[in-house]
Amino acid sequence: MPRSSLSRRLPAALRSRRAKAGAATVAALVAGTAVFGVGQATAEHSVPRSDKEIPNLTLVQDEIKAYYGDTVTAGGEHYASPKSNYARQVHSVEEKARAYLTRALARHDAAADKGHTKPAIVLDMDDTTLLTYNYELREGFHFTEKSQDEYLASTDMDPVFGMDRLVTWAHSKGAEVFFLTGRKEAQREWSVRNLKNVGYDVPLDRGHVYLKNKENPPAYLPCGADCTTVEYKSGTRKHIESLGYRIVANFGDQYSDLRGGFGERTFKLPNPMYYLP
Image 1 (cartoon, rainbow, N blue to C red):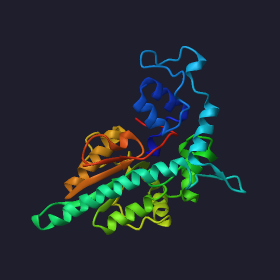
Image 2: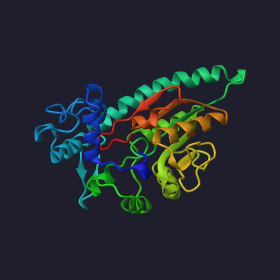
Image 3: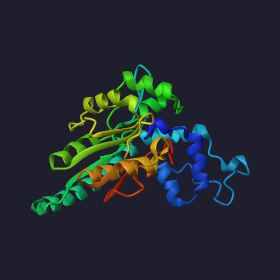
Image 4: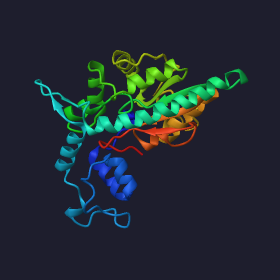
């Protein structure tokens, strides 16, 4: 999740869902829950005509907690369960990704003596490689830059279930690993510390971890400090490929992480907590 650009919390996500009503969009946003299926507004009238078209916010949050298998510690901290429906859905995505990468990296090895570029994978950070669930519950699904800074400075987010193993495995098979996040540049030290501490055993230097730098945007982004998420991420992937890499897989929890090209295959991780255009 690109936190530095996060201005829409759960209610906004619901509004966006109503505006883009349709089974595929609902399924993507809700990640398998049924709470949005009744009485939703349609594209013809995205502004609700009655309260019956608006999902109850408390019930939506309860559905999210159930989906993640909400576990509360003695100290009142909330964590997702590795036995949850969320974890099962993530593992299904990972299985498909591992099978694909096994074939893609084998093809690269077979062609290695023909001068092909080095294969790479690109991954978003929040809710793709690092799980924000504990932060979300601590803040009541109410993001602020201040609360995020305070959390990241002092707390390591857990890895998204199994993603640390998938990433380390892909790297061992010859894939270069790049992290591409909308987190702001000032959060680099905390982000790198977190990735390292929870098991991402891959290079984490500036050449492999890209954060959004609005103060000094890189020259390879024509949109500069005004990039949309899609422009920022696709432009950075284009830059990575210009360095001699072929991005065989791109991972993200938002469709804006995946759009814009420069990647042979995309893998969408589930996330019903927020939507980012």
